[in-house]
Amino acid sequence: MPRRSAPDVRFRPIPAFIAIAVIIAIAGMWVLFARTEAGRYDATRRVQQSRSEILMRLQITDLGGPLVQEIYELKDIDGVSSARYSATNFAGTTVHVAAPARRTKEYGSDVAYVFGQAVQDGIWELTDKPPRGNTAKQYTVYVSQLVTGQHGDRTITFTDPHYWATTGGHQFHIKLERNKPVPDLLQMKSTQIVDPRYQKVVDDITSFGSPGFRAAVATQRAKLIAAK
Image (cartoon, rainbow, N blue to C red; front, top):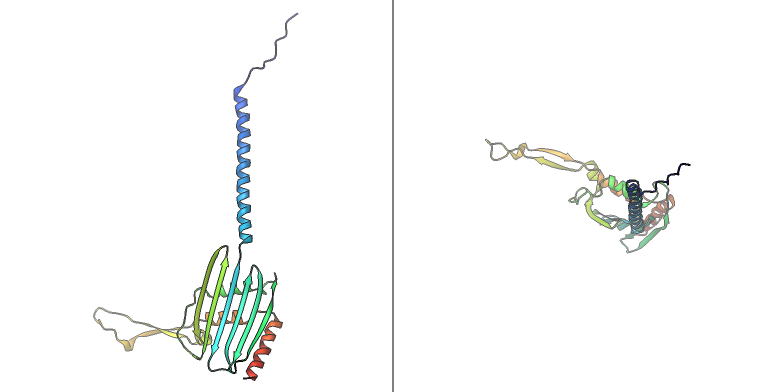
């Protein structure tokens, strides 16, 4: 009777090495994935927990009108919007109107939306303007933003935004020629500079608020003017 051969139980190194390599690769990928996801989670959590602030303030000083000062102030603190208006007449009487702070997702009804509009209207690019038009009335706009640890602010001062939006100033061009070292100032050409952005930024701030808030501002403003 023929003898059965014993099963071949010899160690095969190549398949074993392949299996070990696969296990190591899977473990490495898992560790890398876990670290990546943990980093993303920490970054997201830091952004969510970082404080965000938007402040917009318009101060109008009028030495020739019934109200010597008006202040519109808009705030957004971590997504919660609030607004405040105050005015003072020549008699020294001051009124305040405040809109309660609230968190809203209604498009166009929060301070962040108004700030976005002001950015589109050039709030970060506008500069101080020399007194022009109705120089008795001065406008000072201050805007500040804090987001993800980055802060920026800007203050601009100008008079009569309607003047800059409709009339503006003039920019003169001087052309120098070799055979005429001294330019003829009487022949200078000028370009009219009209910039409606100043009026837009003022309108962005003064038109903010619910119908009830704007109605309360109009009422108190009228009473203050009548009591001068």
